[in-house]
Length: 104
Image (cartoon, rainbow, N blue to C red):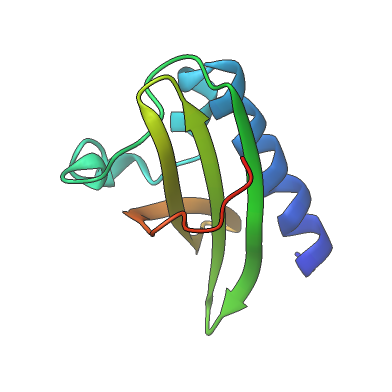
């Protein structure tokens, strides 16, 4: 999968989060990592007022996506770390990052 193809996949995933389609968003994740992947991580849990994809990049054998979400509970910087599993990219880990300077 090219970098452009992964970006399309990541944009679709973010779209699921923004629209509140958590079933589809969770389907993009490594199933055996759920629910532990959410421990200690702030994630959008409903309506999203706005978002901005900050970065999509390859790091070694992983893809990284970073998005800032503007939610009713505040602004959340969320990084997802994707791994290739059975020929498909799946989000394997989540972590927050400071959304400083965000224009979400």
